[in-house]
Image (tube, helix red, strand yellow):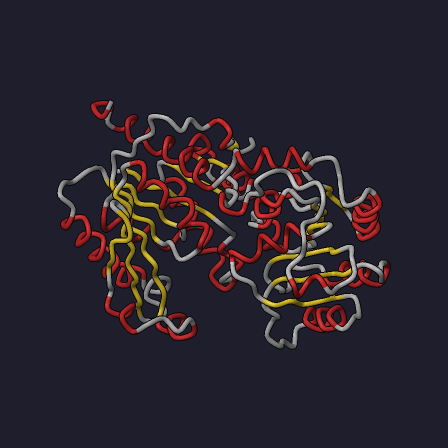
Length: 409
């Protein structure tokens, strides 16, 4: 059985309402916030929890006020709260570590003028212990990765806990279809409650109209020779650096452009591959850019690249955010044949090996940086924004609540 894929195109934006209180644990990832925070505009009281341990808080240089559980209201029905806990509390000793989080949730709910059904959205299996403490009306499990890969020493424990979370949840939402299908196999009794919901497109980044030709490049890009073959994202071991080396060497007249922070030095073999690639004369690392700037770079690319390793376990479990980021730019895309990218074969080119990848890039460049699918990408991005994706999920949550309590009709 394959997970049902929710298509934001089907969402009706009229008459949506959220007659519930929503707590998101946790909203530290930007896409988690983008998915759930729009529900505050539909009538839900939304609390976004950002939870971390002391080490992470120090590394992120979070202000000291974050360490005293500050809660702030950032909109008429939207709150956020930072919680910093000792290392290991949430994952190693969750029965203890979840108590301060439960206290924060109960304190917030007491501050509201009235009590409505509580929906708890959890983004890690460990938060199942939190669900036992606050006893929500409905539990939503939102999965963004295969978390057993994060903590391989505890993989079996995590897999078991995740299966329990899926079985307990009124709705389990997976941004990657590969993961949704896996959990349907693992927890078949919850199959009708497992949903594939891909990441949305950032509305503010969607081109005003389909961009058939590359836009005028920013200053630090303008001095490089075209065509621009661009990648936006983390420069890490998940990228196929050998593929990128072959592309750069095969097409020395092309400029390979990377937008993202250079990786920290590592003894791992992939870092040596990265160093070889960055030393090539037609490879250019332009560093980190703000979200507001990124759109200008993507719009100027001749070809947007998704050069991930097809055999990397993280890549099999993920829904790359750059799928919809690139779609929003409307520029042509060439990707390796990842499971999630394979779902978008109508919108960009897929390659099974380096030869196919280079040929796909060449075809677009020879056609004047066009691939004939600009309009299709633009249409899809406009109909698949984060706001529309959020509305679709909101409707499902509301439907689940009404099924539990028909008197809410």
